[in-house]
Amino acid sequence: MLKKIFGSAKDIIVIFVCALLLSLLIKGLLIDNRVIPTSSMVPTVPVGGRILVNRLVYVFGEPQFQDIVVFEPTESTKTEVGRGDDMLKRVIGVAGDTILILGGQLYRNGEAVDEPYISAAMDYDFGPVVVPEGCVFLLGDNRNSSFDAHLWSDPFVPVGNVKGKAFFIYWPKEKFGTLQ
Image (cartoon, rainbow, N blue to C red; front, side):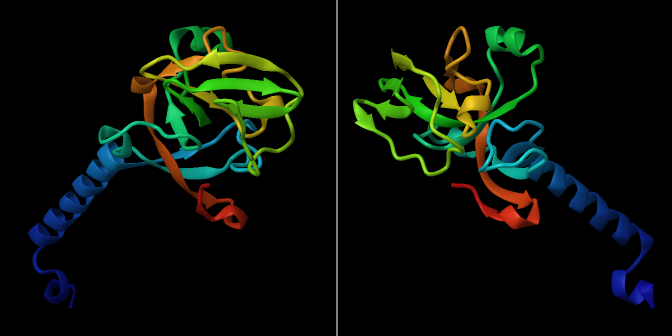
C-alpha cells in the first residue's frame, strides 16, 4: 500500500532530502524564528515569546521608524551586556533623525511620538542626539527596564548589524498575530 502511495524507498528519500534542504534554505535565507529571553519588549513580546523574523527584508531596503528588529549588538554593547547574543528592539530613529526624551515623552525631529506599544512612560531624560548616517537608534518597548540605546555608551547601531525585521509572534497563543 505505501509503495503505491510513495513509490520506491528511493523516492521517499529524495522527497525527504528535498524537504529538508528547502526548510534549511528558508530558515537560512528568508525566515528565522527566535525565542525572546528578556522583558525588554514587554508588552509587545513577553518573556519567552516566540517570533518570526524576515531576514530578507533589509537586503532591499533599510530599517524604518517603528520596525521591530533583530540585531547583533556592537562590540561596546556586547561588553556592556556581558554577552554577544542578538537582541530585539524597536527602531526609534534612522539616519538624520534627532531623538529627545524629555519628561517621559519621546520626540523625533521635534514632534512628540504617540507610542501605544510601550509599557509605561519613560522615567528618564535622554538627548538630544542625531542619528548618524548608516545607523539606527533602538529602544525596547519596556523602556524603564530595557538595556537599550539610552544606556549604551554608543547609542547607535550600524544598519549592517540589523539581521531582520520581526513580523509575527506565534507564542504565547494569546499574542498570536502580526507584530505592530
